[in-house]
Image (cartoon, rainbow, N blue to C red):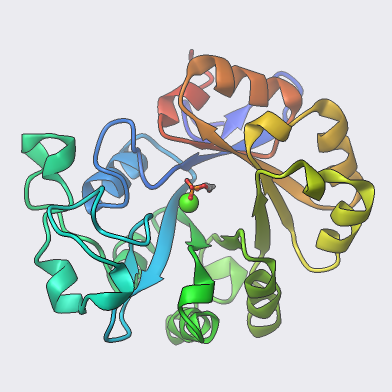
Length: 255
Ligand code: G3P
Ligand code: CA
């Protein structure tokens, strides 16, 4: 394996290193600065949170309001792209990031295709009717719905939305996100495996037994959010397939 990024453990198992909202430990989440840092740190994927502006443009931001991560206020869905682009999405994290903007989905696809995998989270898709079709079209326009052209995974906490994406883009792997114990019963896992390639739980839910069950159902498991070396080491030991981390260097075999 490369010196960092895709980790090879003693038993030659590969673990995908996913920069959570970019390398959020080092730069403001969901900005080009954070995504570039993830690429520089040799992550296999960047994770992005996708929402939609008032005038229908797909944008990258985690919260449903702009309050925490920009100098503005209000719901993402109530602001136009123009209004969103005028906000400063960097300075809350440090003066050196002043001027970072909320990226658009277009910008991310054009900048990172062919350079790094993209783990797309549909954030609160229930607020954005038709967002699944819109995402599918954007990917198709660029031929990114064909897996060999780029590593793309689409995930959500909203399982209906994941099912919809699976039907629209049958070749693109999809994942279900959860932090609920109710979703790790054999029955629930079986149901997810009917359409999802990935089961992506909060790391508090992860055990070797859960990893075994996921693999027996022919799914992969990616877990989040690593913010300490201990958490990274725990997930490597559990045998997960992907680690979604604020600090890509914690998932580094040289450490
Ligand atoms: O990729 C998993 C993770 O991003 C889910 O939680 O709240 O950080 O979007 P959140
Ligand atoms: Ca996310």
